[in-house]
Amino acid sequence: MLRRRALRTAVATCAATAVLAAPALAGTGGAGAPGVGDSYYPEAGNGGYDVSHYDIRLRYQPENDLLRGTTTIVAEPTEDLSSFNLDFALKIRSVRVNGAPARVERQGATEVTVTPKRALPEGSLATFVVSYADKPSTVEVNGQTPWKRTENGAVAVGQPLISEWWFPGSDHPSDKASFDISVAVPNGTEVLSNGRMTARVRQGDWTRWNWRMPSPSATYLAFLAIGQYDVHGKKGAFDQPMITAYADGLGDIKGPAEASLERTPEILEFLSGIVGPYPFETQGGVVPAEGLGFALENQTRPVYSPNFFRIGSNTSVVTHELAHQWFGDSVALEDWSSIWLNEGFASYAEWLWAEHEGNGTAQELFDHYYSSYPADSPFWQVTPGDPGKEDLFHASVYNRGAMTLHALRNRIGDAKMLRTVRTWFERNRGGNATVSEFIEHAERVSGQRLDGFFDEWLFSTGKPQVGSATGVPRTAAARTAEASAPKAVEQLNHTHELLARMHNRG
Image 1 (cartoon, one colour):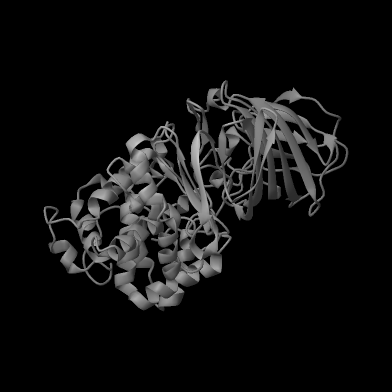
Image 2 (tube, helix red, strand yellow):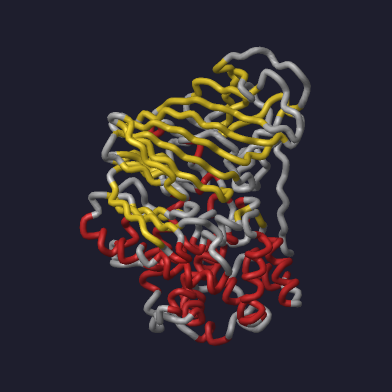
């Protein structure tokens, strides 16, 4: 039976050790939940308020990895709050709520409970100002830190968790917000982040870089890359600002990296012709020299490991991360169990781009991957529609995820498939969604009942059988794994081997 998930409200109780003091609470209200009840990460995000904006002001010294910061969070309580939680791992110096000092208690590695002087009324305008200082690369949770220190800077890029290592907040995709990110670094050091660079101001021996991302974003899609970079600004697709940056020290990888990322406008135009208008105001990409073994779809500015370009230019990974701007960034997850909505669509976009480039049709790529995994392969034991926390970035989520979309296309026809995808994006642009909602949408647009189809492809172990009911043409069953692979396969396999490292990146 098709399993359809709903978010659960998590209520956590645990002993707390006070780390800061403030006047006692005056007023009434309840405690905000320490998490949104996500299926895989129940304490991710926080209940009781919605964030609308983050103003992050940092000062970073690459020499010793010391990060000093003040983050102002603009939020609206969704209930009367006597206390609330923040997701944060660094050492806090102080917290003020609506201008007044607040009491802070740390509950575990990344949970912080804040008790304001006065309760926060539902629907009011609230500001949380958090000051902090720490060395992020030394702060480990479960033996790992997603903050990667480099020879001359750092890279703050990760999924599903990263913000706890550089700004406090509500770290779950269901709570999106706009961002202002300002970072002061020693002169001669570059800072890359999301959106548009609004100013770069020299202040004695330091330079402050200011970035603005007005479109609401999930917290894990905000990023920093600090170090020595060759930064390029130009007009991209749709006459938008485009910024690309390549770290010093890339050596002979820089050429293939540039040959890939500089095609960003072309790929965005291709994808917009399929899905609909590009959802953001800026575009580009960043390639650090070290500290990163994967790629991530940071909103407006994906970041790519140089390893993707060791085989030469690689527009497959660029297409994957740019497709995420629609699927994963603009239409974000409501729950991490719906990861297929991100990775299945981005992986299928790679197939469509390969066909556009003459490197194999989507059908040929489907046939290749369907036949490459025998029926007894462990590949078919992971269900993309609900892979489980440990298999969040399993190859099945990517490759079987893409196969699912092509099988759906075969099942309902090209015209209805195109309409399904476009109207799905239009309907959910800037919001959040679940797999079950996509299934209902596909049924509505196609006029077909698809529960059995999606049960077989997304929620059942085992290899789907051929036939019209599953959307698998019999040509796929007849093809052997030894048959000549489409030209795109080498690049696709290289890309997905690196992307699949996401979950085991430590």
